[in-house]
Image (cartoon, rainbow, N blue to C red):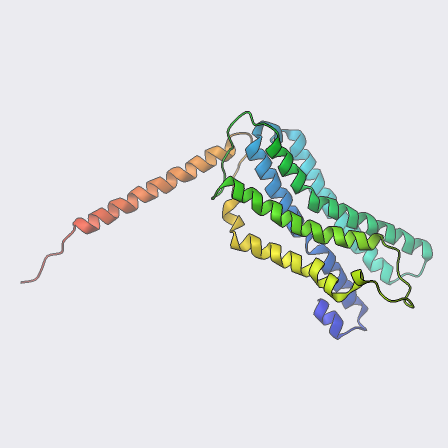
Length: 248
C-alpha cells in the first residue's frame, strides 16, 4: 500500500489506506506477545494467573485494543476530509491516546513476565511447548523490547508539536527513522519468531483450562511420543530380524 501510495501521490484514498496499515499492522504482534506472556505467567503461577479476574482483565484488554483500532481508523479517515478546527483537535487527541495506549500495550508483556519470574513459586513450573523455559522467556522479552522501542518512538514523535512547513524537518521525521522504527524492527521480530519456531515453543494443549492443564497436556504429548518411538523401534527391529528368502 505504501509503495502504491508513493507511486500515485494524488490518490487520497490510497494514502489513507497506507497510513492505516502502517499503524495497525504491528497490533497483531502486540496481541501475540500478550498471549505468550499470559501463557508464561500461567505456567509459573497457575493458581494466580488462572484466576477469573486475570482472564477477564486480558479479555477486556483485547476488546479495548480492537475498539482503539476502530477509533484510530475513524479519526485518520476523518482528518483527511475535514477542515473544522475543533474536529481536527479531537482527532489529534484520539490519535495521541491511541499511540500512547499501543506503546503501553507493547511494553506490558515485559513487566508481567519479570514480575512472574521474581515472585517466589509455590509449585514447579508447568511445562508447555518444546524447548527450555528460559529460552522461551528470552524470545518473548527480546521481541517485546523491539516492538516496544518502535511503538515508544512513534508515540513520542506524535506528542511533539507539529513543525511548520517553512521550517526544516527534524531528524526524527527522516525516512531512515520512519523505516527503522516502523518496518525494520517489526521484520526483525517476525524473523526471530519464525526462526525460533514459536509455534512449537509456545504451544499449549487444546482445551487447556485451569491449573495443571499445561502439565497434563505436556505429559500426554510426551507419552504419545514415547509410544510412537517404541512402535518405530519395534518396526525397526522386526525389519532387521526379517531375512528374505534367496532364490536358488
